[in-house]
Image 1 (cartoon, rainbow, N blue to C red):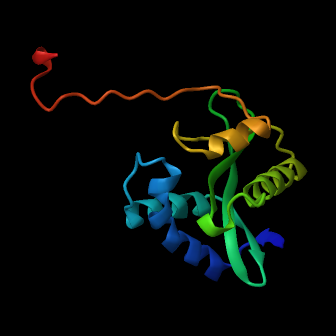
Image 2 (image 1 turned 60 degrees about the vertical axis):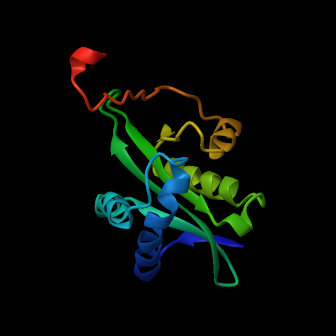
Length: 153
C-alpha cells in the first residue's frame, strides 16, 4: 500500500473516471454527466488542487482531491477535501481513512490548520468524517419550485 501524489497521466485518468462516480459521491443528487465533473475537477486542479492516490501493486484503489483557498468568511487559509473515492471492491479496508489522514497531514505541513469538505446528506462517508473529527458548520437547503405559476403555491 502506498499513498502518493498523482502524475499527469494518472490525474487525467481519474478526471475521466470522475463523471462515472459523481452520482454515487453525491448520493444520487447529481447525475453521471462526465463532462460536467471533468470540468469541475479540472478547474480545481488548474487552481492548485491535486490528487493523492492509494495503490497496491500498481492497482488503483482510491483517491482524494485536495487543495487550499482563502476563506471568504474568516480570511484564513483553509484546506479543502474536494473528492474522496474508493472503488467498491476495496471498501471497508481503511483506505478512505488513510487517504483522509494523509491529505490532512499534507495540508498541516503546509501551514493549513482548518480543513473543510462538502458531503451530501445520504453519503455514508459522512460517518467517517465525523469519526475523524469533522463537524457540521453549514447546511444547504433546496426547494424545487413548481414548473407552474408561483401564484399556485
